[in-house]
Image (cartoon, rainbow, N blue to C red; front, side, top):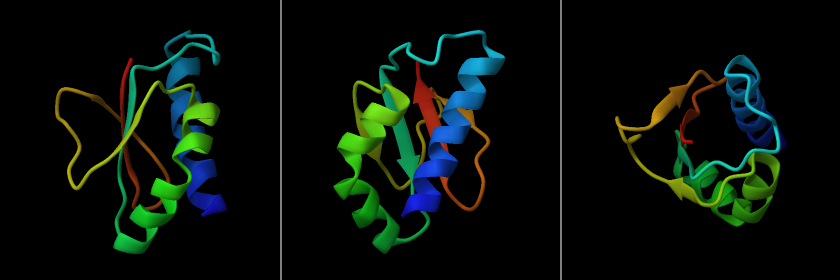
Length: 84
């Protein structure tokens, strides 16, 4: 799980940095599409940590990312998107 959290945090921090947004700026939503059911369960248990790390008001775990959200490049098979 630690590696997944680092990859998610890195993707969000990279986006904020490249967009010249303060790392402390709140995001409306962080959306994640985990590649496996076990990672889905693990991330569900870490929702509070994810909200704190990324400053997301809410975290959604989904099968497919919402195309209206901004998709972020992330390491591994994790799909990450945000709604600023």
